[in-house]
Image 1 (cartoon, one colour):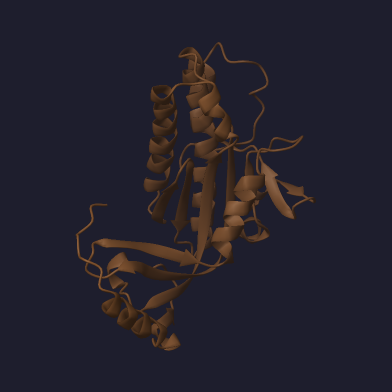
Image 2 (spheres, one colour):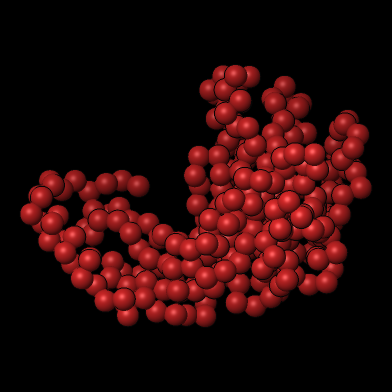
Length: 257
């Protein structure tokens, strides 16, 4: 984001601090759905139940040892652009963030089918990574592993930044964001290599068919699985003939999402 230069004045800064600290707690409202960004000011905020989806590359710090920077740029561009495309294609996704090699989405999920819809995004992301790795292999680029984490809960949505500078962001505060990030960090590690980790809150709100695609993880008290999008996986199996064995037999969600 381009900045608007304004010389720093410490007395103005100290007055702004007093103004922020004296704001009333009643300016933070409880709402049922995620409000539009333009409803946020520097003096209000909204409590809302929502869902968070995090996707991160495993062991990304090792990639610079294998590839030069132009190739690394291609890896990250491929990964980030298409994860964002999947999230952006879901009408329930209200916010998308990019943090280095991690992409996260905040979803408006007051209804259970909307949580199923976010879960379907995770299956598409898993299928996308399979295709991406096939294309990487053909270009002699290292394959990547990802972890996917999801949680549902209450968050405080605020606008943060410097008024008048053009620099501002929506900040999501609450355990739902931290938990989804932590689940993402645990996914696709250890003996099982399950890519998708979901919290108990997500699992309890999924429909019966989606629940059956997951297994309980007693170590982390969550549910995990290697769920794929059926239509994307059919395309993969038809068009990626020279893939290594061991990629078949994954649980799939129908391609109608």
